[in-house]
Image 1: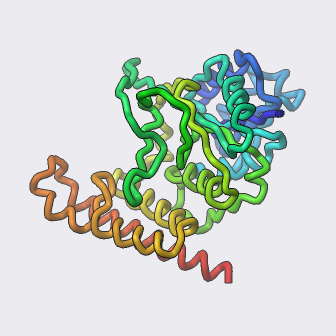
Image 2: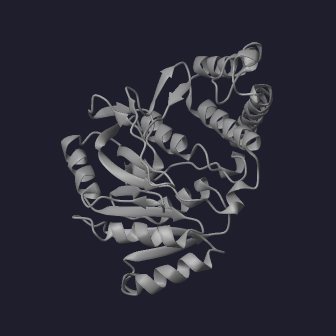
Length: 318
């Protein structure tokens, strides 16, 4: 199996070079490296050329550019440009252990029927500390539509398992299941930074009927770095509304009709502490978070926006 490594990056040249240095320490190197940059990210382009001039000249490192901001745009471009069997994805602030690709390919050989493989990202905070918490669940829906990510926590007891969604910093997928992947970017909220993994993983799991394997021992180190200010011009409540809108749009495209109805009712009335529904207003006096009423308002706004985006999408298809 030949491999393509896709690294979306936006104005973080130093961490990108650090990530690339870890790529070249792999025991099995990717057959091509695709770096997706924004057209205004001249500093990253310059540093890649300076540090990896030979690899750029030979075409081993391929730099492609986009003119919009949003992970959906970056991912779509990377997938379109990739040409090999297995597409690896990681972030520009990740550090890849030497056997990351090797271990992933071993999983594909052992589980040839899966559509994708991923693993844990060990988060290194800005003060250098590491989160050591344990979890019983990772990358799955626990009740109704409450998604538990926790890819950065230690799955205990450690075991390989099939999950509903992988995390982009440590994710790989078979290209043959992504060839006709639909990216309805016009119906996502602008500057989409939330939900792209749902879009891709739901496509592979629900459209292509392929399982996704999570290996907690095949890790990457995620040394989280500050994001450029262009990505955070809006406050947390606006981000909550945007993420809820994108989540709603994606879920409504992939769920069955009964599931869609349950999702709308559950999200509107109950939700969760991050995206609370209407009934949680009665618990707000007992919660420490004073923003609960505002969160409820923006959750409902996001839910409504995602629902109308879904209707627009259906009309565009008819």
